[in-house]
Length: 353
Image (cartoon, rainbow, N blue to C red):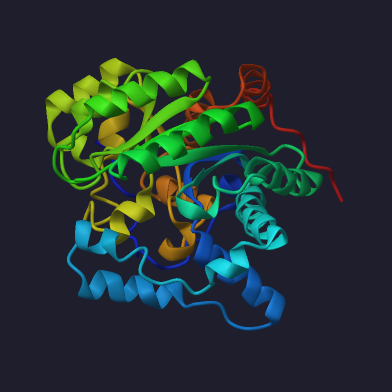
């Protein structure tokens, strides 16, 4: 087991990013849209005012709310930007552009955005606006690839869930790349049989499949691994508590989407040093990094790579995390192959003078 090279890491402090880590190509494989926090940030810049203080909010969350589900339930309680503002197409594009620009500025070559609720798929122009945001950022960062994934809240009432599933299948023709299962109860065993049927429909439509599992308990990990077409798990932290589950994940070949700061701030683990990311790697599990809710958790993908570096990952091992993410991504095959090829290219010499 590798140990941290540094004293205990502060969950909310800015993390210096060395030039070597900054230069690495990165991937953010688990990024939620945070529509209101992100739009508030965009509008605040536009209006010349301060955005909502998420650093203060996160500090209070950790100090005052018990870890686990109580903290998770606080995530969607504050909406600094109104839903009416998000209805404006240019605002919608601007917040997606902000997300992609933030990742690309940190060296990300792949950013996967996760959408859900009433703020995205109900828009008939959803994927067109997503592609426009990607186009704008690629003008400044031509090496960036972006994908869109939709979160299925499988505990929704059946008629609403069916409407969302149907919309996802239709959006697949316009470039939606995958679905993510999120269910209730989240920290106890849920009913998965209907989800298996939904997964078959998604795979038949060409969509990739991932699922949140194991963030606050060992519940649902084994059930998630039986989802048809599943290639990734979000978090899976508690699998490290059960050798059988850890072996099952390793044997399955799925990639675990690790979100270090999210897991510490919400209390899945008590500290970065206690995070099981090394146990996953040493068990033969493919691991990738993600920021989850970066505005609310005060992080970026560059910071997540810097944290992994502080936990003992070498530069080559960090690059392996990027390769893992691209390989497990829901990019079209040719685009994925081309992106992987760029990761194998030797670094270009920097011009002198």
